[in-house]
Length: 279
Image 1 (cartoon, rainbow, N blue to C red):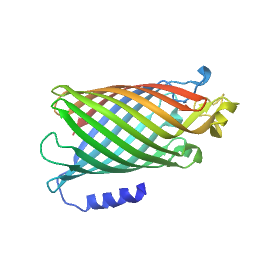
Image 2: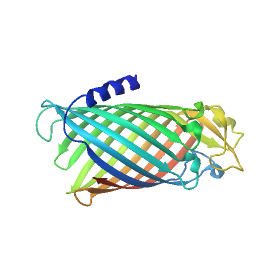
Image 3: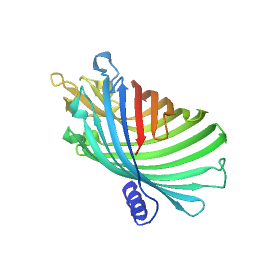
Image 4: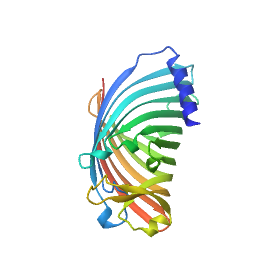
């Protein structure tokens, strides 16, 4: 379903004449305290990730209340400690947006479809990603905006061990603290597949999920078993975004994730710094 909705919207977007495409480029660095999604100290592994993205987007008005947003992008990720996680992808995103009324305080709803093909150094991780999302946005005051979003995402990988499906709902509150400076606090709840790694035997994890094979991604001398678990995750995130000038935006974020299924529970603490530039 996600694929058909996405392809239909993309064909409609490319067939419509409109404004020029606006290119942009971005770079980011992030630290994940528990990339292995483990719950025992000897299996918990932290890692640094670098990323880059090159994209172009177009905003096409469709009458007074509707807008079509189209984005094409290519991105890459590099993990200095674990090159098996390195990956790169190309994809497209199409969003239909409707504003109900005039003025800054009119509510806005958006339906979004996205698709991406992702290549990876570990061949089993290669595959297709699809996403379908519904977003609502409401300005509460000149400096305050509230957003709600629900999305369904799926990753069909070359190896079944890396397939993932999940649904996530996010509620975010934005504060425009000063011209060009925005603070965003959000909470999200997700239900779906997660990949966890542990040194076997782990009968406690097997009671909640299923083993998919030994992996040497993190240590060739000490393989870890990978598990797929259908779990619930709650995330809290705080982000600060600052416009350095009309073209450059610097963002910093901290996130805390708590994932649980039965007796299995693990925590992630993530820090990220990104710089975006409109070309």
